[in-house]
Length: 173
Image 1 (cartoon, rainbow, N blue to C red):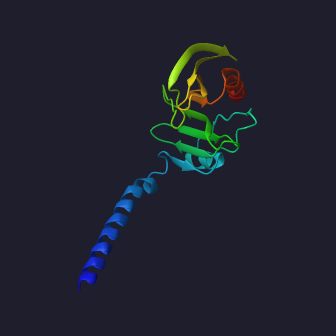
Image 2: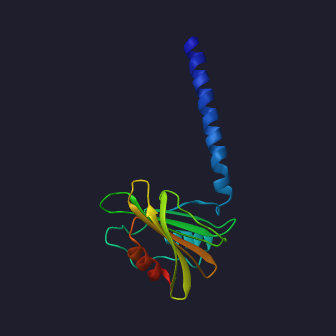
Image 3: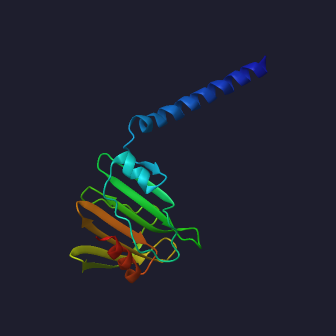
């Protein structure tokens, strides 16, 4: 008798957990244009109808292509975040983000903890803000942000400034 009550209780708890999980997943089913993970860039273009995705043409040798993680949304404004890992160290070394919102700036899993310099830098007719400093693990981190055709683009990487500028320049058409 006690075993039946115990299993009935466990079954009830399990049903409640499944219901909560389903309710939590429901908005993603209903609204496909909210921030979520995608498998590749073409899927983002097709599902969210984002025509202009700024992708670096130049990559340092240690970075893996394609992106290890891609997140995107269509609402409240179009945005895409691409995460690239180091092929040797299996850690995140580059994040490229773009969003059609003033001040859109995503750092996520790679943040500059201690800022050393902030420099306005001009190239190819764009004015970028270049920030250098160190990450969590005291590695050098560099961040560049600029506006390109209505999109706010931010690149943050465990790279020195000249290497990051090469990546940024490769994104400008």
